[in-house]
Length: 467
Image (cartoon, rainbow, N blue to C red; front, side, top):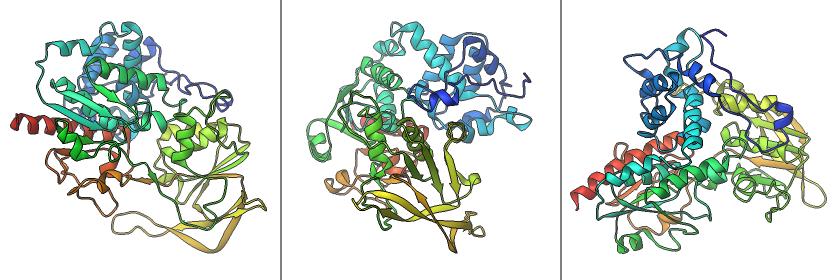
C-alpha cells in the first residue's frame, strides 16, 4: 500500500452491521497503528495542532506511537485531551487536524483520529486503571474552593477534568440518571460504545470529581442556590436539548419523532434491546429530515431496528452535507437512500391519525449570497410523495430555557444561547461560565470540549483572584 494512502480501518461488513448495534469500526491493530503513525512528516510548524480545538501535540504522540511507545503516546494525548477514546471515534478530523495535514497535499492526510483511538483503547486495556493518569494528581496541592459543573456532556466533562487537574473540588450535576450527556443519549452504540463513555467518566471519578445524577438545575437548585451552597464558580454545559421542528402540517401525527426523543430512547434507554422497558416505534419505511451527524445516527438506528427502507431528505446537495464523511459513507454502504435538494412540506395521515406519507418539495440552490452560502429555493410545481410510517426530524436544536428562566441577569442571544466571552467563556453573571452547545447551538463534541477547557482556565484565574 502506498504511503500516500491511509491505513484502512477494519470494519464490520456493511450487511452484518446494518442489523446490529455493535461498533461498526473495529479499530487498528498495533502494527496498523504504528504504520499509520509513521506517515506523519513531523512538520516543524505543526499545522495540525492549530486545527485541534484542544491543542493535542499531534506530531509528538504520532512519533511515539510509530515507535510502539503507546503508553507515552497516550500520556501525550491525555495531557491536553481528557476524552481521547471519545474523540478518536467521533471527532470530524477531516475538517480539523487532518484538514491541515501536509501529508494530505499529495495524498491522504494522516489518520490522526484512528491512531488516537488506538492508543486510548490500548492504554485502557493494558492498565485497567492500575496506572491511570489520575494517579499523577495525588501530587497536586488541593485548593479550598470548589466548582460546580452543570451538565456532563463533552464540555462539562472536559471542564471538570481540567479543574480537577488544578486541584479544585468539582461536582458535576447531571439531569439524567447516567453521566455523559450527548455522548450517552445522543450518539449510538455502534459509533461510540457506552462502555467507552463510562470508562472516561470513571477516570474523572478517580481524580475526585463527584457526580450527582437526576439533578435538574433550575428545578432542584437554581444557580444562585449553588453559590449559596459554597461553590465559587459554576460552568454551564447543559447542551442544546430542545428540538427544532419545521412547523409544517402533520408534524403532530403519531409516527413523527424529533431526533432527540428517538435517539434518547434508543441510546440512553436501550429501547433496541428486547428486554428494555422503554418502548419505541419500529418503522418499516422511515424518512429522516436533515443532513448532519444526528440525521445519520437516526437513520442508521432506524435501519438497525428493522426498517425495510430508510430515506434521508436533505434540502441541499451532497457537497453541503455537514455530517462526517465516514458516517455518510457508512450510511450509504448500509443501504440508506439520500434524496438531495428535497424537503418535506406536509405529512399525511391514515384513518387512525398515524403517519402514512410525506409530501416533499424539490429544491434548487440559489447563487451564493454575501457569505458564500447557496440557499435552497423551492422549484414551482415540483413535489412528490414518499410513503412512510415514521419520520424523524433532525434539523437542529436550541438550548432548554430552564436555566435562563431561573437565573436573573444571564444574557442570551436571539437564538436563546447563553452569551459568552469568546476567550474566557464568561457570561454576564460574575463567576458563571458556559460552553458547548448552550453557547454555540448544536456543534461538535471537540468544539464543546475546547470551550470546556478554555472555561476551566478562566475559572481557575477567577478563583485564584478571589481566594
